[in-house]
Image (tube, rainbow, N blue to C red):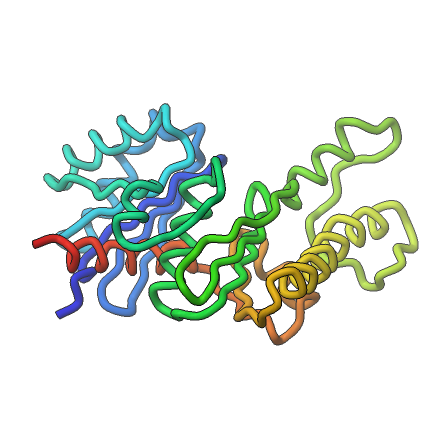
Length: 254
């Protein structure tokens, strides 16, 4: 029996709460700006409750100040105690790492996907930040890199320069921009995609191994065409990782 049937997976990032109702292979996604949590969380949970009766909740959060209230509201709405994912829990399940200070989201995504693939994985997450993380065949989180996300790059250029401005986050027609908008789009989107490809090559050389490469995050559709076919684009990678962790937790408990 699938231990993660009728599961609510909550992923609280820096800018958004991503929620997913999972029934077998079917995923119903919901989303809420982090700034709207206090005002609209009750309405979100009410909408989610219409999907069916929950059997479990799992939560990964990078906002410690909001985690306790989110758990309390989830328990009030659904009558279930959420499983909270952190490094201590993941190490109980078998995660190994010598890194210091890695975020719960990075560890959960890497280890949750490793539970499914059981091989060397390289995971690029294009969200508020762009993270590139490696986990090896033995389930050891090796670490990674962090750089500003596409939106942060665009906002920094607009706010910190005299003549640059807000541009739509869409790919330019050519790598060489013919005007300022296209030049910024080339630098922000293509530049970060090619940076990630180059870093992935450096990671593989440093670790002396081949990685199965996964790209995810809110900007995955923008950058995937420039990463190449060797990258597996998965919009719900973190949600699926949380599902795998929940199944492992319930299987681990006596």
